Length: 226
Ligand code: C5P
Image (cartoon, rainbow, N blue to C red; front, side, top):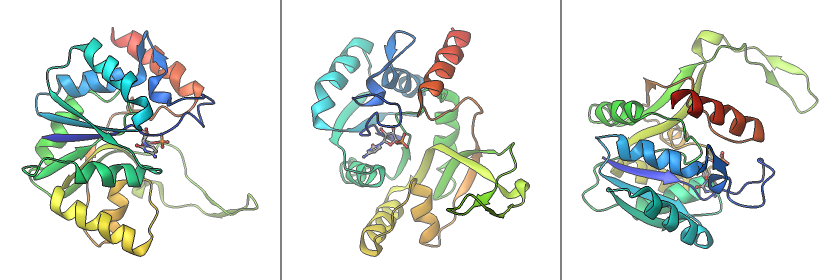
């Protein structure tokens, strides 16, 4: 299975002056944990890291340090996650029929989750890892007034990996560019094109590291695992 890792963001919401994936968590850069999980997932054979060229020296040093055995390519990132994935899709080897896309910032996903998604995408054309929400979710307007309360049992929190048929996802991304759609995950493009996306059970610990608090939680989870 081919895996694309969008890793071209900044550290803005983290309050960092550099790519948050290069910040240290339990004595390793955050992206190192993501790469170690991908390396340990037996289903993954090729890894494309979509990242900004100024970060490439750091990424190359991390890859060398981890002594990863799988084929890894660095692909130039875009100005949004959507653009980064678009670039990644163009850089896939021509024999890639399916692809998993996994945010570099989700450094706690387990090899088992990668393998479960790799297996499931052989039987459908689009999927995401997701967990049912525990909180009651409110839709709120710009004045801070609640507009509605969606029924909780229908709500799921989207995670990555997300898996797709490569040909179909490329078509959805191209349609997104034509229509000017701006989305925060790839499943949204699939949905907008009227295609079915399935849920694969995600992991409660599969956090997207976004704020300094998330970094502290990741430290705790990784130390607990060790
Ligand atoms: O900013 P956020 O954490 O939501 O980004 C999700 C993932 O997308 C991160 O792994 C980040 O590195 C990546 N990203 C990207 N290109 C961008 C912005 C974000 O690959 N321009």
